[in-house]
Length: 338
Image (cartoon, rainbow, N blue to C red):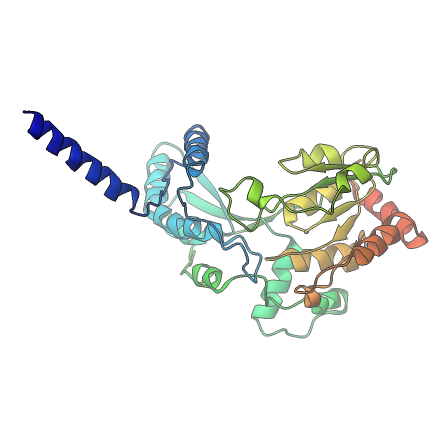
C-alpha cells in the first residue's frame, strides 16, 4: 500500500513537472456585452500577473493602425445571417423596419433589401471631407470644381491602413434595391483662455494591452515635477468632452480621430494636429486647411520622423500666442455649439 502511494505521488509529481515545462497561452472568448466583457477583462489581468502570454498587438508596427481589432472585424462578417433573421422576425410584427448600419458593416446587412418592408441607411462614422477624398482617390482623382480643390492636398493612403484591412474592406457589400442613404456625422466644437496643459498620455494603439506598467510611455526625468502647478499628466482614461468644454481649455493636441475632432469642434476648441493612421491625416487637412481652426504639428509625409520638442513648442505657440492663433481660436469658437 505504501509503495503504491509512493509511486502515485511520484507519477503526479512527474506529471506536474512536465506540465510546468510546457508553454501555455490563454485566449479569452467573451460574450460582447458589457457585464460579461468586464468580468473576463478582470480575469485576463489576473492571468497576465502569472506571466502567461496572451495574444497581443504588434508593439512596433510601422503602421500605427490598431491591428488588434482586425480579428473582430473578420468575426463580424458572421453576423450577416443572424441580423437578417432578426430583421425578418421584426418585419412580421411592424409595418416598417428601418436599419441604420455603420459604414464598416454593409456586408452584414446586404440581404435586408430582400425584406419588402425594410430599408437601410448607412451611418458614416468619418467626416464627409474624408469620405469625399477617399472616393475621389478611388475614382482616379478626376478634375475637381474650384470649391473642392483643397481635396487635392490630402495625403495618399500610404501608411494609413495595414494590408489586412484592405482585405476586409473589399468584402462584397451590394445593397441593391434598398433605400440606401448616408447619415454623415455633422461638424459639431467653448471657450479658450489659459495656457496651462492637461496631457493624456496613453499608448492606446500599440503595445501589449495586457501589460500595465510596460505600456507606460516614458517621460523625461522629473518632468511631472517640473510642470507641477502648470500641467497635469493623466495616463489612463480621461473625460475628454468635459475637459474640452472647460472654459480654461484653449487648445487641443490631437491625433485627429473623427470623434475627437467632433468633440473639439463642438466645444469651440482649436486643434494642434498630429495624425497617426486611418482617416486622421485627412481630418488634419480638414481642420487646418479647410475649416482653418487648427495648426499642423507634423506633416503626414514626415510621419516616420521623430518630432522634436522644439517643433511641438513652435506649433503650440503659433496656436496660443500669435495673431494667427487669435484668428484660429476665433473661428473655432464661432464654429462651436456655444
